[in-house]
Length: 318
Image 1 (cartoon, rainbow, N blue to C red):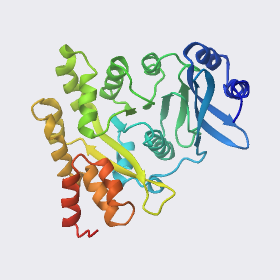
Image 2 (cartoon, rainbow, N blue to C red):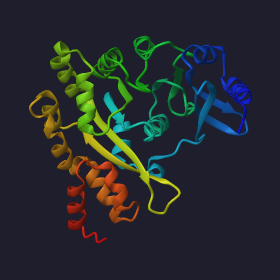
Image 3 (cartoon, rainbow, N blue to C red):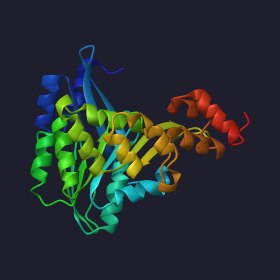
Image 4 (cartoon, rainbow, N blue to C red):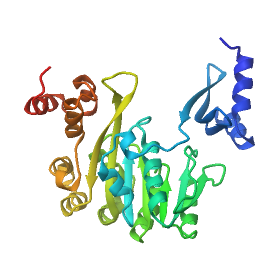
């Protein structure tokens, strides 16, 4: 076990600059990206535990994985390539949101001639210009606030804007304005389900703005991808279970009308023609092809009893 002095030295050496060292000294915690030539790139969090410096590193692949490798449906690629509007990637911490967004940006970069602006905290995947020109900005290093960088970014002539995470009403408001004026906006949001995501977007606004917010969301939203990672049946890896909503007249109406918002799950369940699916539908699919176990599938659905009914209907036998 390293001594407190050794741990302090390792963490201070890993912090990439004065900005991070100041933040760690002031707040006792700090997020940053660590690039080690010849070894790899890592997402890092430095923090104090029982007064001692500690650090957790998560390896970030240098090669951005594709949709097939990630186990994502063609609908996710289609959402990435929409022209204008808001696309949200949701899920809890550690569910692979950043990786999915990186794959979406990579697909745009490979196929569209446009300017892509990303605002991230921190930058994890490094993108290089292909068909597109990419400007990657990191919170604290290149800008002080998501909302400020987003407002400034609107004057940088972007066609596509990636927001690493929507955390406050100002960022959400500016993201919707950008989407309504023809920009493609990709963003992550902490939400467990699509219904939860819609409610969180609305609830982030003050009560007196929520009616107008519903209108803006309904008009600009192109789709929502919500995901969870569960243990693969084969062991030693994880499989993504995905819930997808695509903007349709029924979905827009459910967002506009507070009395119909609770029907969104049913709309998604019935929207297979448009590429939609619920967590339960995707979990059943993955169990039936042998990718995950029924026990793992139970972790991502709201009603376990409904899952087992659906599995039996699909021909699953324990």
